[in-house]
Image (cartoon, rainbow, N blue to C red; front, side, top):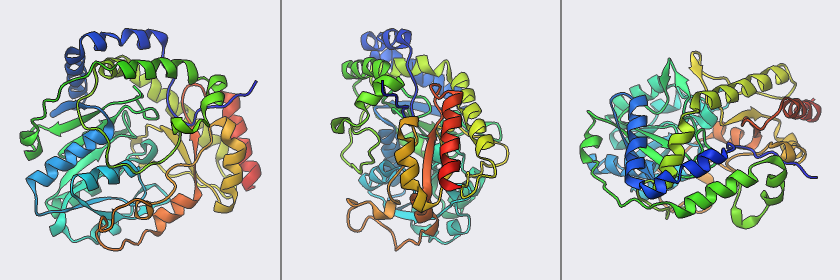
Length: 393
């Protein structure tokens, strides 16, 4: 029987799928309970549940545009989730793209000194695959521009830098509970707002809350199909769009659904064990691949604890296709197919200037990701490492 590991995500317990129906019957209560719980993890923040992480990001961008309407540019990493670009463009920002350092997947520090600060309204972190950015550098860049720092922790919930949870820096933070994220409730997100920031004074959204019938159906299906044998039958069904990267500025805006809020609260209770297991798997990959010829493992910041929603590895570009083809059943995958500047559907005029992004282009050519979720067994890790060493050796 075929077996195929999902590249990312988390299995859901049947008790959580069923127990979260409390959100279907009491949606407002469950939304508020989740918001209180997350506000408690991020001192000094207001938490507002949204229908998705990109909806939370859009709201952060919209608040920044309303507060500083003359500053029409947003600084973001040139290689990141395409939804970040879609949310920024929808909020009326032009994209000021900054190159990344392939050694760390963090911003190239020198490139952060090159933009005109007078036009910048916001700077956005990215924390790719859960590796924390140097938020001190970004806070100084935001202060230089008089811009708002938006700490986008969509890929990094439960990552820490200096003992502080990622997502809590700056004026706003963003969490995402999407299918492949650190805390996958299969949908939903949260906007975190610094209580003392001008952005918090403008945040007055009071959307109606849906019960989340479709969300329950998604969770039930996920419970059945996330396992390696069942996943093998659905992974390539085109209408599911599993693993596809899409630029879509028409996404829904609204509050988190009741069922999703309840499911997120239940999964949240196990967050420390989930994070520990991912870090254990990441450490095993690092040990197995140490000194392997032709490979580079991006270096986490000293004193940080990455979330590792996937484990990133840079491989020789001419070897990447073979690695992904042979490693597909083991959850080996690529990520975003191109830097933000080369999104096919990016509107004309969306970019501020003509960015030079050699680091981002290198990452796009060389990156593969390895799964870190709890279904990855020791034998899987060994097989993945053996494949990379064989192909690249």
